[in-house]
Length: 238
Image 1 (cartoon, helix red, strand yellow):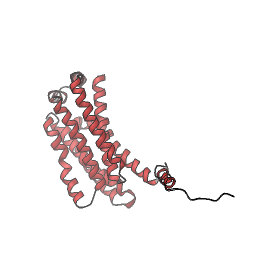
Image 2: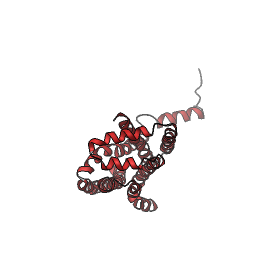
Image 3: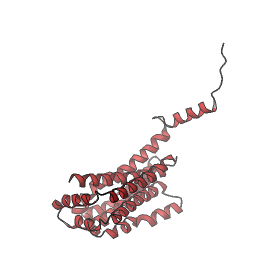
Image 4: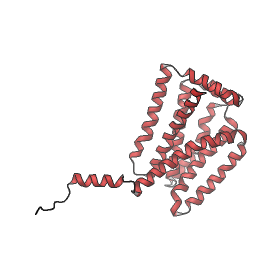
């Protein structure tokens, strides 16, 4: 009769890893939910807020209060506190988008300062040990925006930025196509590849963390890259 021997340390580690990455694992489920919620709050509002803010900027701005109140309400309950925290962080990105794209969109140099309006609030909350998920989401979104703007400055697309914002909507595809053609050279392609690599590294490395706030941060950064690629694709296909 063979004797039973306890599993080795290596076996135990394998069991632990399988347990963590099991589809039924509450840890993985919560982290992936946080990640995809962050992606949703960056990607989807681009297609919803962009047309809204052009035609009804005051309505878009007013909705900021709706998101904030909803976030505060969700944060007041233990079962939904995490999502309320995330929604409050999203509120600052929505506010910035409403202000900039509603009234200041023709001036690219104002884009990043306006997007950073929520930065003091995020930093104050972090110093107080509060709102980590929402603050990290906001910081990820802001960082992704800053890196994207850097590429715009780097490739001298500022004149075309102003044209897109000032021409009639039916002429926008023409300007975007012209802008895409100016980027089809080895230098700008290399710069774009570098920007994409930086965003990927910044977005992927935090996924090794067990903290939900870093998963919100990664979702915001990586979805910024997705939005950039979608705009580039639409410009090439225009």
